[in-house]
Length: 140
Image (cartoon, rainbow, N blue to C red; front, side, top):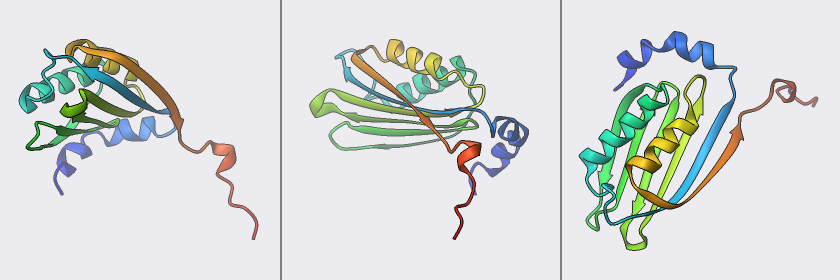
């Protein structure tokens, strides 16, 4: 599978982070005219730089560019994933960062907002995962 060799280098990191808090940062924002979101290469560079700013590790990158200049970009991270979806007809961008472990999700989002020149930004952090005390299997 693609990425298996790269992912194996982060096996220890994943084990260490298995019990750390998991947070989904759901971001909605308005794209400004100067935002580089339609340029897939630039968007990928900005996203990768933002992940590094949060001490994250990019393992794989995939994207789809649509005829209307919309883009879906996904970065598979050692710490989970970052996805970016754009809707040019609405000047809308939706960013989802699912993070665990040592990655600083707030730093990643702040870097993306600044570098992509976004406005009207809303960030909704959502705690994810099942707590240890609720992992018990119910009696049958």
